[in-house]
Length: 393
Image 1 (cartoon, rainbow, N blue to C red):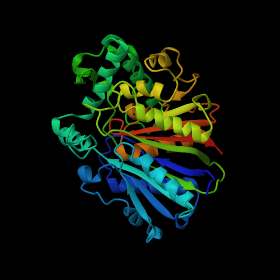
Image 2 (cartoon, helix red, strand yellow):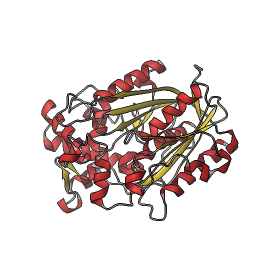
Image 3 (tube, one colour):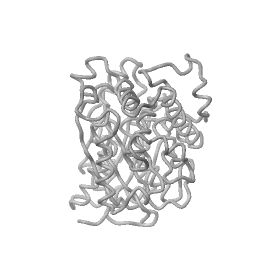
């Protein structure tokens, strides 16, 4: 089957520190919500793919995919699979579901992304996340993910002669943009707008250094949440076409690595492959949901997706290219920085919210005159890079 696959329904739960929710209740809410949104019968689903990073570490539940039968007994005996690719687990599940449909193994597939992270204390949460690094070289040597992405911040300053003050200004502006959008998203973990100046003027205790030069407000959130989409071989009313998917893997480590510490090489390759597949360029997409796990990541993504040249990423901020009215609105959901980052749910959420944008049913800010959008979901410190391009059907 060479035809493009369609998203025909989607659902996103609230993201946050959801004390009353479990990994099971979140899975259930997202799965039921997506089926209802697609307006199909449960029995039409031929397979289920689940994005989940580490239910074992967070919830003592690694074997989560078949819980779909508990949620919907009508799905008993159909295949269900779990995809794990660190923070790109959700998009991995979507891409695998697309492959299943294109292979002819299925016609309609439910994809769920879920993570319940606020079940551990800070120390054990950091440990669980560090398992997505190259453990032998990084996690076992006390590198946390803020520390790994601080490598990019330091590399960027050194490569392009950017001062700490300049970098802090760029990163604070990215945080402010995320908070401004997040404040308008009823599902976002954080819903408080802050200006760039507010962030830069915070006292040390309110914005402590986490991993030099990254501070608290440069880091995404420890969130609980789930999202789901229904993929179909056939389009229907209010469906959105997946016109390209691509993935590019890179060295597992960023510390003492052969990959650049000032540019997202794998992400750039994945974006290039997706645009070539879709016969499009960055000029053809009006918005993007990208992986701003840290503010430095979003800054580097501007060049990776082709909005700016390497070393000139700040121009996307100065020229307002990534704001409403600009070339490509980046993270109108609030992104991982404000919307939240329940790891296994993140990639599915990106697809669910972009689907809502493209059907003029945005959750939060509706971007006008949107015809196509890009998703960039990154796993680890840039070892897994996954891209989808969605377009109105």
